[in-house]
Each structure stands twice: as structure tokens, then as C-alpha cells.
Image (cartoon, rainbow, N blue to C red):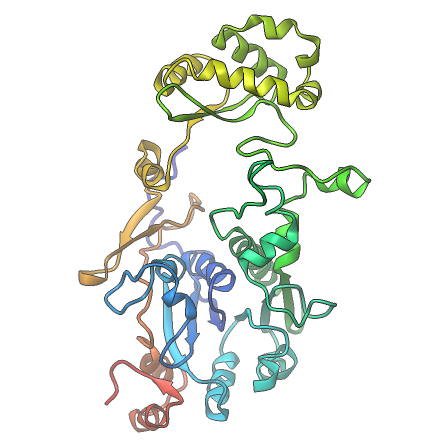
Length: 413
């Protein structure tokens, strides 16, 4: 069955009617709220005056308002409201918005929002069914609680960086902000779970997502043996610490091909394609465990064979087998591949000079409609709308808040 055709427009997205007050910034929190916004939630993004979310300045300036590609990638389908909640008038506006919100998401250091009367214990009396999600580097307590943390430091502290790269090249950062994105996905999953559980639970729910825990969970396949006393896995470049051969090989044209022979059947097929049947007779290569043990002598042999033909030749030959294989594509090639184009993995949103290409929500369901994505908001684009429509403030009230610097609006004089 294909899910390419949109569901009838009368059907609702799963989080339609859910309001999320997004106090988060940078990577993990915005990524979490974007997942829920893609699936129908109304997300009101609170930003600081003048600068907004700091990620507006990460990477390349891309939008007419100067917002970066990083910000644009993580903030579609949201409204932007600028409020200085470090001031009493601003924190009171946030408290008023919490009263009518289903979810609050934040990723400040522990204690920061409590100083402004916006911590979990401070706001639950405002909304007895509130779901409050806090994403932190290390959790709310513990020996590291006062330290800041971000994607690169969490990669370093979680074992991810030490297990990535080549043996002689030192630890290597994973190119994508994997710790931010993983924490964001866990947060979105937890919020969805809390919304589901709300029908059977009384009272507010507090969700805590420590980035360090989320990152270490990505190393789950290594934990049983390491915890039992085995050594930590060594970085294997494009290879795999637990499977051989399972890596990229350089071909005669300088391009690389990935081969994942993770079963003995695949190993046998690979040897026949490479025309090295003698390797099948070697006792030290008869099982994956033995191939791991003899990795240092086996991999150079395979590298030498792959270097004798160009990548397309190898892809054609391996394509006639069941051995998992693929070319190594850069991001420009990946988003323009035949399959990505077919899936609509990347698409344009926005209008006029605010058109931007972003990834599409990968989750689909045969009973959900496809949301028509809205462009990431300009700073303060929706401040007036939210204050007037949701909090019933008059134009004069809003102008007074703008004049005093508590809020910023794009269309108030």
C-alpha cells in the first residue's frame, strides 16, 4: 500500500488542538517541538528581544531577516512571540499563556526558569493538566548539574566521539548534531506519550530528558559487554566494531562503495563477486567473530580488490546479489537522489522571498493528511496576534509593552 496520496482533508492530524508553549532554543528543544508541530500541534515559540533564538545566528545567513540555515531547518510550522520574561511583566505574560497551553517545553540550565517564576513547581497551579518537558545537559541534579552542555560536549562525554573516527586519527565529532537531535526525538516521544496518558492521569506531568542519557542510549549495542568488563570499542573509520566487513571501500576511480556483509551468506556472496574464493577456505574468516578478530589482515586484502574496478562496476556486480551495498553520497547528492526526490524528502515552503528548502516530516500515516508546512517565523512575527487573540490585550496595551521593551512586534507603531 502506498502512502504517497494525501488522506482526505477532513481528517485531523494527531496533535491538532494541542498547544505547545516553546521556551526552548538552539537544537534539542526546537527539534522536539517541530516534530509535534509537523503533526498538527500549535507551537508558540517564545524568543528573547532583539536577538531571538541564538540559533538564528548559527551557520549561514539564509533568510531576508538574517536567520541562519540552522534556524530555518528546526523551526517550521511555529509562531514567534518576543517576550522578555526576565522582567516581571514578561514572566506574567508567559504565565498567562501557560494557563491555556497543553505543553511547555524548555531547555535552560536547571533553576534558570524558576528564578523567573516559570519552573514546573511555579506554574502547575495555573494549569492542573499541564505537561512540562525539561531538556537539560545532565538532568536536574547530580555532580555535573551546574555545568553547561551542548552537542559537542555531550558527544565527548557519552562515548560517541571516542568511538567515531579512525584508530590513528583521534576522536571525531559526528557531523550532524546527533545529541541535540536525539534528545529532541526522545522529548517529542515523551510528550506524545504524556498526551496519550493524560486521559487516565490526574494532575500535571513533568518530563525530564537529560541529553547525556539520550546520547549514551545510542551506544546501547556496546553497553552489555563494556559494563561486564570488556574494553571500550575502538574507532574503525567507516567500519563497524561488531561486524566485518561492514564499511566503505575506495574504488579505482576514487569513489567509495559501502558493503555490509553482516551474515555468512553475504560474506560468501561477496567473496564470489570479488573473485576471491580462497578467502572462503581460510579458517580465520569462517565466522563474523573470527573476521572481527582478524580485521587488520582481512580489510587490507578487500581494499586491494575494490581498488581494481570503479564504483559503478562494483555496484552493478553487487547489485546482482543480495549483499547490502551503496555508494557514499554527500548531502548534495543525497537530497537529489532518485529516491529522495520520489519521497519528497526535501521540499520548498514559504512564499516570495521567504521560500526555503527544508526536510519533510518523515512520519506518514494512511489516515493523516499531509500538513501544508509554514515557513519558519521571522522574529516577533506573531507577537501581536498572540497577545491580542490569546490574552485579549488591546492595541494600547501591546503598544505600552513594546514601548517599555517587554515585547517586540513587527507591526506595532
